[in-house]
Length: 466
Image (cartoon, rainbow, N blue to C red; front, top):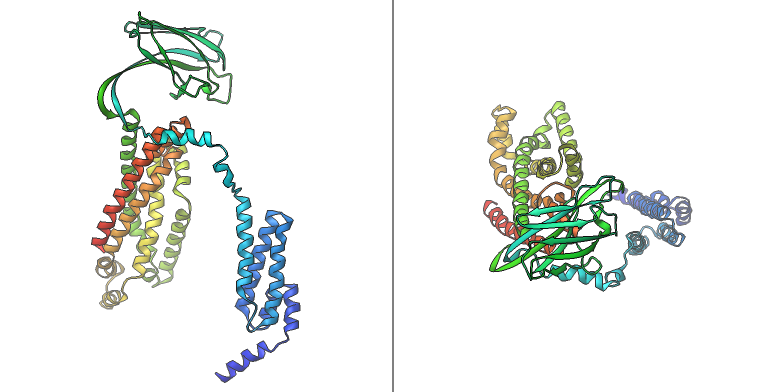
């Protein structure tokens, strides 16, 4: 002990000015020279990260941060063994990281309040979620219109059991006017006029295309009006592609009572798809992760070089697939198999295998080694050790982890739908694109209710298992 203390004292007795000179040349070198190797490495890494960050950002004023850390590093080398206050270096680095991070992310708090009318146009309809609607008898009619015009556009005329609609001309370009005449409708009745794009999107035509256009029929059920082709009627980058749009004519008769709206039905369908997608991904993921977890547990695979190679390979693949977000995998699977819940399920399954395999293996590594040693002592094979010494200890935590992963998959599946992976997220993304914020609000509420219910029951189940 005395010799160790003497060696430390001798290293700290080295000239502080030599240490300062060394730290002036390379930050942290003076600390290493005076025997504080770990401190010197930490100082160098702190300075290097600050220097690289400021050079990458390229704003000269931020170069003061690495300069300040350089000065602090020299001061620290002189003050050893006590050293300079670490809090000063920490604050310099944090101020640099926070300041550059603030500017890189372009945070602009005033943007939240700079356009209150736009915010109100989004938030106001969200206060009236579209899930339940008044029961109605809806009569929908339409007439086809080509946008833009080809050399021989199809006739813009359509008949529906006594209702006849004609548009003139038969085709039009963006912002051009079209005269529409209809007969055979319910007389003296308010009628909604809308534009239906080639993809099925509904665009409003009233007051600068921001409100629903409503016109009443005359005493004989006839209607005539002029509409302007919306600028968003052509949704393809090539303006020479001829698309068949529609001008919709809708009459709604209130019947009384309430029912689930059309969007509400889509929400229910999307929620069921989301739950089924998450459930199947969790089941398949757990089935494949279970055997792989034993191969990824060090305490079971360290008996010989071959098993260690298998352990390293399995663990590496788990880390790779776990590090790739399921959303990215969903994009790849959508390209391979097309849109729908199936690619979303595949993406979640792959990610679940890697994530659960890692968690399962850590549970196996943390079990009581006593039963394993006892079974080993009887001359049991590797499979017998797993069967009689490992599995009885891991069933409860494995079950709890699987239930928890289902919770995660339900949340993830809502996001996967944004890239075409099915579920409620797919409908939510469509409503956001169409600006139907009443449906967006209803979807938010439905997702929140499902997640809350899932959290409650899964927490109760995990508590009973553990």
